[in-house]
Amino acid sequence: MLQIKKMKKIIFILLLFTTIFSVIAQENLIFKETDSLKTDHEKNSAIINYTFKDLDENEIIDSLRIKTKLHLNSAAHCMILYSMSKNMRLSSKEKKALELRVTEIAERFYNSNKYVLFRKFRRNTGNDSMFLKDTIKGKKVAIILFGSNCVITRFDMLRSEIRAIFNPKMETLLSK
Image (cartoon, rainbow, N blue to C red):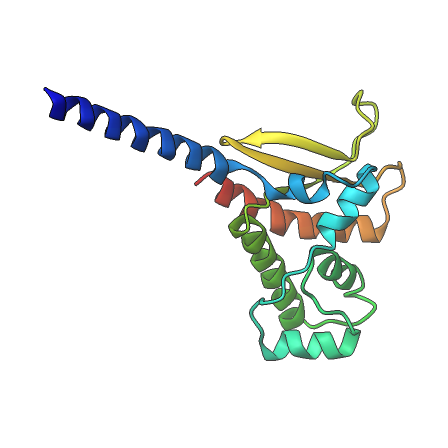
C-alpha cells in the first residue's frame, strides 16, 4: 500500500513537471526581449532587425553580402535587398538564394522560441497597434504589421513577397 502511494506521488510530480515544461516551451521569448521597449515601432524594429549569427553560407549569399554590404542575417536585410532586386539586377539564382535565406530565418526564429508573423496593416480595424499578440496552435505569436497608408509602393509589394515566403514556413512550424 505504501508503495502505491509513493508511485502515485512520483507520477503526480512527473506530470506536474511535464506540464510546466510544456507551458514554458510554448512561451514566446520575443515578448520577453521586447517587453522593455515602449512603442510598437521599437518592438517591430527590434524583431525585424533581429540577427542570427550562424546562418548557412554559400557562394551566392557571400557574393550578395559583398555586393550590397548587407550581412543578410536578419529579415530586414533580406527585405531591403529583395525590394532593390530589380535595381540591382539580381539574377534568378540570387533571388532564390535570398528566398531560401528568408525561410532559414523563419526556421531560426521558430527554433529559438521566437514566434513571429508579418502581416499587412489594415486601417479601420479598430486597432491602430502595429504590434499584436495572437495564439496559434497554443503558441503565443508576435504579429508585426507593415504599411500604414493607402499608397502601395513597389517596396510594399516586394515586402509582400517576402511575407509570402516567411509566413507559410513559420505557420507550418507553428502547426507542429
